Length: 362
Image 1 (cartoon, one colour):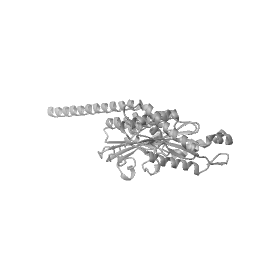
Image 2: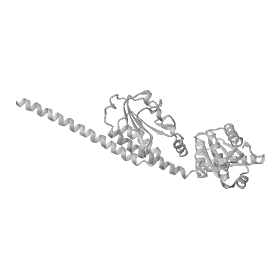
Image 3: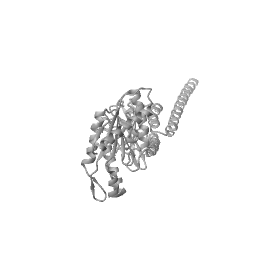
Image 4: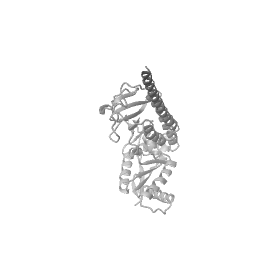
């Protein structure tokens, strides 16, 4: 009898020890999640937010891979991030879904938990990231709209199983969705301060700031940088004949046609009035002239349809310059000013030469 009681007592003590150890582990897990929540909620910029997702969440949850997929059909988010000098190529786990949202076959508004399926999950875990064995796909919902997915992956096949409870994961997804929306809205506000309200392209403040950054980068790394100074020909006549509303429509359409010929990495800004400046990153003078010719042709070849029903043909003159290697001792601001002045001088020669022309500073 005494031996039986002793054995039962020992078993109870072992069970209690295991429970206490499990409680201690759970407490540590909850503490890590609380720290993650605080760090995540305190993110003020998109950079801080994605660093929290890919580093802090991965560590706190003991995961092997995490991806964040955002629905971005018009590339609006990517343009904002590019304008704010965030290189999305540095984040292979950050995915933008342009189209085919319906092709992602898991239930759109409920977590999908279970084994990894190439057919279902390949877009959320592209070739640039580790392929997991089990996954939890968490839809990000804001204001009853699907904005993306937070995808958690583990090499452990038993980590995420189809029968496991998803309440905690849904709570995590709700926090992430709120923070993603807030940070993107904050970045939009910052972007608005650097955007021309009429044309929707960048304003002069942005281009001047970006110009200093790119000239400094050229100074350090020696890659090629080109600039275009673009001016609408006889724009005063447009305003005189069609009013300021017609002039505004022309400016918006010309800005859109210029933008359509550029890469996301390039910078376009309205410098004032009917003048635009373009910075072509890592582009030689010859390449810049080719792009300038495409812009000139796209503007002059197709008439602009005004809301009054009239079709108006307009042309642009473009001056192009290229920044040659500059020494580290040279003043960045002075080099930037001279670089842009050369494009402006080339523009003047294009105007003198009859307009609707591209002239190179060299």
